[in-house]
Image (cartoon, rainbow, N blue to C red):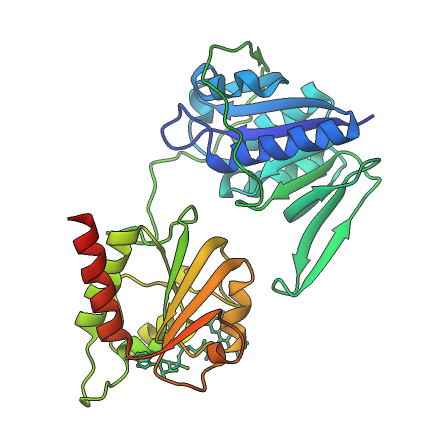
Length: 342
Ligand SMILES: Cc1cc2nc3c(=O)[nH]c(=O)nc-3n(C[C@H](O)[C@H](O)[C@H](O)COP(=O)(O)OP(=O)(O)OC[C@H]3O[C@@H](n4cnc5c(N)ncnc54)[C@H](O)[C@@H]3O)c2cc1C
């Protein structure tokens, strides 16, 4: 019988588990129930009592590696922590959120334990054994993988399971001691890739995509980049939407053209960009070409605003297309949102 270990870690506050960790707890509970397997949850954090309190009703044995050395992500200490948890749990299946913290160490620990790892898992199935689903070739081909090698590490993509929600209560935790190796890295703090306003919001209900049209010459023969920036940021402020971009728009920075200063390549959606998950998406001033739209694989309801009645969106890629000038449309939408708020 498999021993399923769910790995979790705290967020920046140090006192709560990350949403992706709680999603992995849900995945682990479902899998353990289906396979009638043992479920163990491991926590890596500075203060395990606070962070693990939300797992009181998870109905599983809790292991923790805690202390000052685990307040920050660092390869040496995190790999040692994860290895110790896997050994203490005698884990055969290890589920971990695909966060930067665990993605960095999971493959190394799998190697140390003679195991195997698969990443970007979007679903776990199977009644007798584990069947893990992931996408290949930029979300075009879906595969179901099963392996006999143990321990088998599976890194889950965020947004694929509901976050486990339980009342916060004091909880019994077994502390696992770790021999921390000589640490060569001192974490001095975070430097975010974007300065100022954070525009990438994976938990937002809506994705708003800006295309290169926002910086093109408009019917009056002029570019209106400042106005475009105000309209886009105004919409993001009013709705809390996440901001995506077409490749053409973010590439313009490298071409020396006028660009929207709050956009970076991290905002890019598509074949060579990201494939986020949101309930709804609104594309503006974007042509809807295939290398871009492939990044919309997991967007539920798609709408687009484009001047071009022949753009890719109108050819069955969006549910609703407004053939219109996005400048006045977004100005009106923002005014309506402001009025609603007032
Ligand atoms: C190997 C490869 C990988 C690629 N990967 C990606 C990727 O990951 N992501 C990606 O996005 N692209 C990718 N591309 C590029 C992609 O093919 C397109 O070139 C790009 O998506 C076009 O961006 P766009 O629609 O914003 O710009 P454009 O094609 O320039 O379209 C701008 C649109 O804005 C409209 N417009 C202009 N003004 C207004 C207005 N006032 N109101 C409304 N509409 C207006 C125009 O009618 C036009 O349709 C890739 C290409 C290749 C070859």
